[in-house]
Structures are given as structure tokens and as C-alpha cells.
Image 1 (cartoon, rainbow, N blue to C red):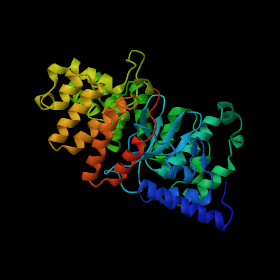
Image 2 (cartoon, rainbow, N blue to C red; image 1 turned 180 degrees about the horizontal axis):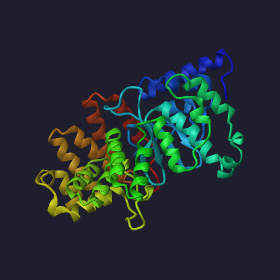
Image 3 (cartoon, helix red, strand yellow; image 1 turned 135 degrees about the vertical axis):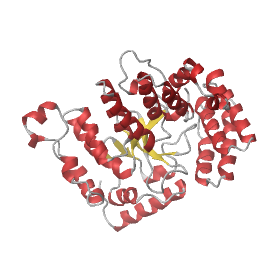
Image 4 (cartoon, one colour; image 1 turned 45 degrees about the horizontal axis):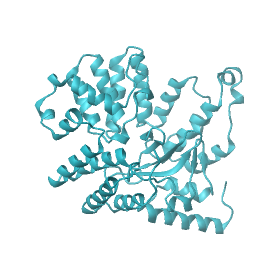
Length: 382
């Protein structure tokens, strides 16, 4: 796993330059150092792609969000890990997302690459151990020397996080695991949502709201955070705030909303796309929806029309583009692309061309480059 001599180090440096050229970004130091120290990084459950693979488009696929930049495969899960790079993210501190290839949706995995590596190490140990190991003999805890070496080489000393927090006594259950993950990464949206659902299941709705509000704050682009917040306000019969939360969901990108079964919402909760449930809730509570929301053209798309019709989304994007609303047009073209990417017709090609035009007009040449690259890939058979 470790690099050998100077020749291998030079090859890694060349590979990193190729990745930076392909991604059109300056890589975070920890990501660079990972490949400068290890030829084939594997931090369970993430099997990182080779630098040569990344620089040639490993993990990219037709219809993928240009802002999602894959760097590795989730072993045993059938998905990918990658950076989420947008104009709003701080350079080098990009959120890490997990792409569920089966469900075709993205969800947060960590707030940055350092947090991601720590989380992988801790979760891998937790999932390896049994409760019997923890109760009978703490000294027998899983001890991965290679992952300890990675931690000491790349992470120890960079933040006020000790080796004992990662490789010490493990949490006893999933709740304690997410509490520890949140202490290690206070902006871990997945843990915030998980712990909010735990509090909600216990009947502590006010504390649940604290977690969900924080999740919305750190990941305003993740539809699930807004949905969990809205659904808790619904349970509290605060319909005004619930409506605002549902409206935030339908303003999200479709691929950035998952499914209700990802969260502990109770046996009577509908099992469906979170985006769909939010749109249905807006229809149900329409008499209480304010004029400012109803007067939006998006209201017609998600409530009056079919929000899962790619033609509806593309036509709406065209109208927004004609009105010079580039951000709104980008959102709707991406929604249309996610809904039509597997279809053997001309629509996705038009959408890619429109996205490239928007990105170039905004000076977002990395996104334009990925949109061009992805548009030439084979389409999914789905």
C-alpha cells in the first residue's frame, strides 16, 4: 500500500497533477497526501480509484450531476463516494457525498475529506465488532494497523482529535456511534438527521427540531434535512413552518433527495420519494399556503403538473432561462436530466448543451467540462 521510492513518488505527483487538470481544481492537502503516501488507498468501506482512473473519468456516468466528483467506490454497498463542488462550497473543504447507484440519489457522507477518512475508520471498526467483543474483552477490539498508520500519517495533529477517539473503546449502539461521529464532525448532516429521528421517536420533538434545524443550516442543498424538519413541524401542528420546509424540499435538486425509508419515521409514515411526499403535502395543505409561494412558477410545476415529467422540467427551465434566471434554469435542467438520462431520445443532449451554455456564461468551466465529458458517455440501460 505504501509508496516505494522516488520513482513511485514522482508517478504519484504526476498523477495528482493529471487529476487536478481533469477536475480543474486544486486538491485538498489531505487528499493529495493520501496518494503521495499510498499507491492504492483503501479506507474501508471506500476503495479509492487510482489516480490514472480518476484522471480518465472513473465513476462518471451519463446523467450524473456535474458537481458530484467521484473518487472511490463503496465496497459492498454498490455506490460511489465523491466531492460535491459548487460555487458555494469553500475551496478545499468540499462535502463528501454517497451516490446510491440503485436508488439514483445522493446523500451527505462527511463535511470534508478529513472527516470522511476519520468516519470511515471509526464506522469500519464499529461494524466489524460484535457486542460480545465489547462486553467481554475491550482489549480484543479490532486493531487495523494500516488504518492506524493512515490516521497518524495524514490526520493526527491536524485537528484536536486524538487517536483514542477513533481507535479506543467503541460505541455500544448506533445512537452512540452517531453521537461520536457528530463530536468528531459537528457538521455531519447524516448524524444530525439520524439523531433528530432518534429524539423524535422518543417523543422529544423540540430536541429533534434542534438537530434538524442544524442539518438544514449545514446542508441547505440536501432535501432530506428540510423534509425531516417540515414533518416534525407537521406533527406539532405548526403547519406554517411545515409548509416552508416542504417548499424548501421541492426547491432542491431531485438527486439530492432520498427516500423516506432512509430514516426512522414510524410504521405509519408513507414509504416514498421524499420529494414526492413533500409535493403531496403541499397539495394537501394548499388552503394554508401563502400567496408568495402559490404565485411562484415552481408551484405550478410541482403541484399542478407532474414534477417527475422531464418535459415539464425542461420547458420550465427554458422559461427560466429566457427570463435570465440562470440558477433556476440550471436546477431545472439538472432535474430534467436526472429524469431522462436513460431514455434514448434527443432531450438529454439538448439539456447538456443548455447546461454547458449556462456554465460558460457564469465562468464555471469545471462544470462545463464535466457536462461535456458526461454527455459523451454511454447511457444507462435502466
